[in-house]
Image 1 (cartoon, rainbow, N blue to C red):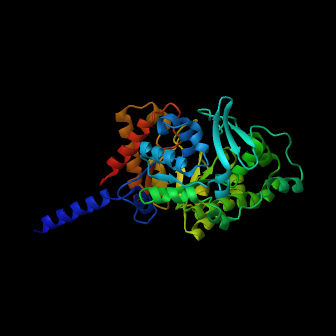
Image 2 (cartoon, one colour):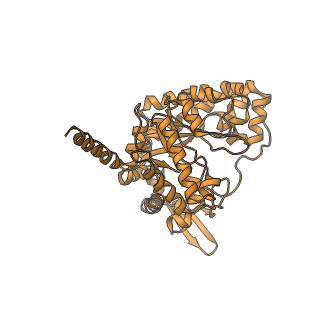
Image 3 (cartoon, rainbow, N blue to C red):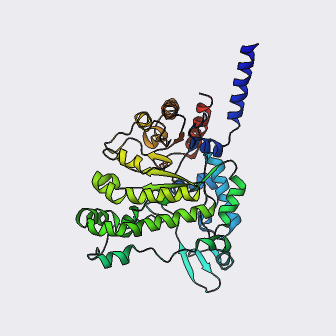
Amino acid sequence: MKSIRIHYFAFMSRREFSMLTGRQKIEAAFTRDGSREFAAAACWEDVFVRDHWDQLTATPWYDQYSPDLERQMAWRSKALARTGQDLLIVPSFYSRQEREQLTIVDQPEGVFLIDQASSKRKKLEPPIVGGWSQFGQMESASFARLPTTPDEFEVAVALPAPVDIERIVADGRADLACALLQAHGTELYPITEVYAPLWYLYELWGFEGMMTLIGERPDLVERACPHLTARTLAAVREAAILGAAGVWIWESFTDMISPQAYEAFSVPGMRRVVEECRHLGIKSIYNFSGNPAGKLDAILSVGADALALEESKKDFVVDINELAAYADGRCTLFGNLDVIGILQNGSDPQLRDAITEQIAAGRRNQNRFVVCLGSPVTPSTPVDRVRLYCDLAREMSHDR
């Protein structure tokens, strides 16, 4: 009789876990005990949507820029249903006044966003698949002149006109986020994506300018760091107002600076960002792109609730099981499944093997884990393949 009772309760436990939503799985992954079932994530939604619009939505490309709330909800809900991942992006949107004034018109000479109050027209271009920005240009690729004095630098990095966070809801800029949360927020884990503080050097002066300043004028970079951090803090506060449960903090190119420069210029600001997330009651997911060699302890010292690293590539190796053994449950880990070698080019058995490896890493990290891709989905990867990955990740992690 005793063995029957044990078997019965074990069966009930499996049923309970099988009924967990994606949001519940990710919320559990952030707890000390973790989650016995893992959620599936495919981050970098803006890149994925840009490169797979027709497969995801079957609606005109310009709907992604539409000021019409119903059109936005329609294509976003279709994309979510096609992909099947467990994350939900909650974006800021046009204000109610802007939505009343703006309209998109498809004319023989092009597609235009028209302000009916002022008659101003902005021509929209379809995003270029694989482009760096939504319109295909490489952002901040070069700079005319770098600042040379502290005063010039502070003017350049100062926070733009601050957004009145409290008015985001009052003006209707949170309306799309609220609608998405009402429709999908029970099932999916809502996040927003923000830049790590040091990223703004790249946004302002491009890769060459960023590296030149860090290498040749560290005094100016140090002076600028509080201003750069203020930009990320503003984005985090907006995320909380929009209803995000977590923020995906994207750090890029800092793998190319020395460990000493990383600890001096990135770590303090990131710690402040993580503190603000905790103060606001939202989770911080630190996505460090590139080679973490020589910096892993500093990366972990930031104290983020979760860490996401790239897959092995570019002559460096990130073994997810070795990372899990090193992290040892100190934080939640997001996986790093290979988007080219496995997701794009691998066979179905290879995909299963890679997911099995990710799940093993999650168990090693005390079940504090979310199965995830290591990079954005490539343009050559069909949406059906992404859906297969998401479905397999959930199925294979069930009760293992």
